[in-house]
Amino acid sequence: MEYKDYYKVLKVTRDASDDEVKKAYRKMAVKYHPDKVASLGEAHVKSATEKFQKVQEAYELIGKVRGIK
Image (tube, rainbow, N blue to C red; front, side, top):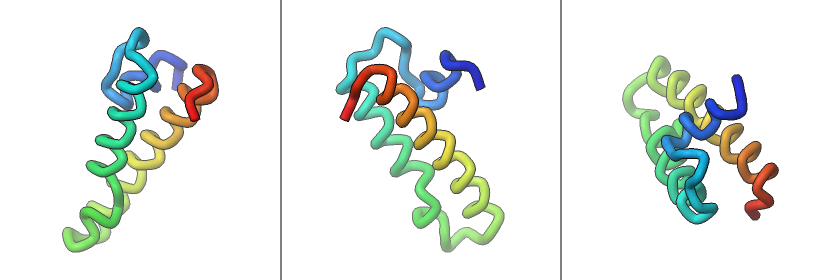
C-alpha cells in the first residue's frame, strides 16, 4: 500500500490536522471493531478484523511520520 493510501483508509486528506487524523482514526476504529459485529457471524467478524487492522496500520504510520502520540 502506498503512503497516500493510508490517508484514504482513514478518509482524510493529507493536509488534515493531527486532531482530524486522530478523530478519523477513532471513528473508523469504532466502526470496524470486530466486537461490534460479533453477533452477525464469522464472515462479518473476519471482514471487520481485516478493515480494523488496516485502520490501525494507517494510523500508526501516519502517526509515526507526523509524530502524533
